[in-house]
Length: 383
Image (cartoon, rainbow, N blue to C red; front, side, top):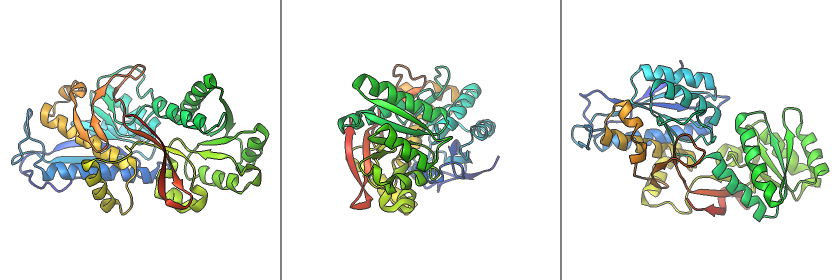
């Protein structure tokens, strides 16, 4: 299994004790969303470094700032491949990690969660949102990101409030995209909205433009991969004079990352997407944001904050509950930790089979046409 093992500077943590190992799943090579993976890993690594500089992980039941065990992050690249992720979970379990963290892609996280539950390995999923993260309810898996149904219903309300009742969905075949389409349809239909499906398995960008005109759609949602076919699709729509008034949306968050702006320039602005940040970061979030910017060399995305919060939660559990996997798996309902985006506690919302932070803050945001490097908050929801 390809991958890297990293250990942050231990700081005050003594190096004469065995480290506490956390397995991390991250997409670092194509076809995974590499930019998202880089941000997720930056957040995970920053939190590990700070834990170790603060003394590491002490004995179960408390923090020993002078004699803690260093925390070690063992990273495996999933490359957006569910089978590769499942194999990585098996390997990490054999390496003796206390818990598993990370992953951005929902279908990949689902495969990882299934294998982790089978192996009795606690897993805190950082960024994947697919509601059905596991087939059956399990106490071994928890998640920081909101369920897809929560965020995408919020996005559908944004569309309705903006006057969009006929919404085209350009989607590729995927459990994740199919789930998103169903959520949108089920939420829009009772409120007078219609979802027009456009199968990107058989349509060119030009054909999509023709279909948008024929169907009289006022909005087009990109439920497709990045950069292809998302980038050529945006360019085609932007250059078609017949579609000058259409809204392009990307609920999955593609425009969040700098590469989107670099590839599309002005064409990439005014495309609303979901992100999971509060209106204003508190003192912890602001401090972490500054550190992440230094680490990344660019503004951190919400995914970087998800990575940091993941390790913050796991470190707190390891300090207070110890490193026994079975003990950690029963500890999710006891979590009460200040994260970068608010207080983190877990519950079991109806229809969600894992322990869930319900809910992180959610926004609809776009890039400002006047300055595409700047974001505009269009709608903010309660946490």
